[in-house]
Every structure is written in C-alpha cells, then in structure tokens.
Image 1: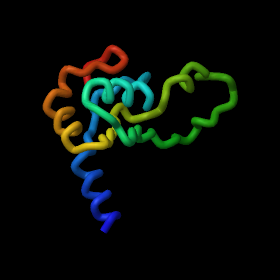
Image 2 (image 1 turned 90 degrees about the vertical axis):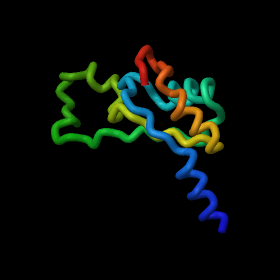
Image 3 (image 1 turned 135 degrees about the vertical axis):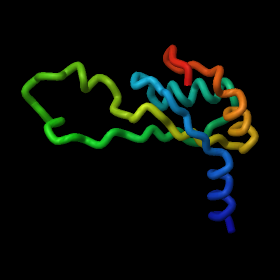
Length: 101
C-alpha cells in the first residue's frame, strides 16, 4: 500500500518545467522553484544522448563541453500536491538564469 500511495503522490506533485536555459542546472531549478512554490523532493533534467563522435579527443570543441547537455526542460517533484498546483497556476512569472520558464 505504501508504494501505491507514493506513486500517486508523485503523479499529483510532479510538474514539467519547459523553456529552461541550457546553462541552468538542478541547483538553479531547485532553488528557484523552492523559493517560489515550496519544498521539492526531486529535480530530473533529462540528458541528450551521446552522439557518435562526441568523444573527440583532438582538442576541438572544448567550449562545447562546458554547456550541460540537458534537453531544455525538467521534471520537478514537489513534496506536496498543493505546491505543484501553485507552480502550475503561477509559474508563468518565474525566471531561471534570466529566462522565462
């Protein structure tokens, strides 16, 4: 019964955050969302899969590796469904790394 209640809580308290800057990381997302809407239990930034040739050790494209390779969105799981609802209703006014999300 505990697993089912945990799964239900996760479904009702998880939101997607779109238009995320590629320079934002989990810490940026968590800090901004907690400050605005309430405690967060998890932040998931799906990564772009490695492409053939990405392990190029010739020294080219060194700058490229400094940018995180997430997809520009995140899943944020709040500790309560009410915080998640507040984030969905009022989230249009939030900026992370100088970008509206």
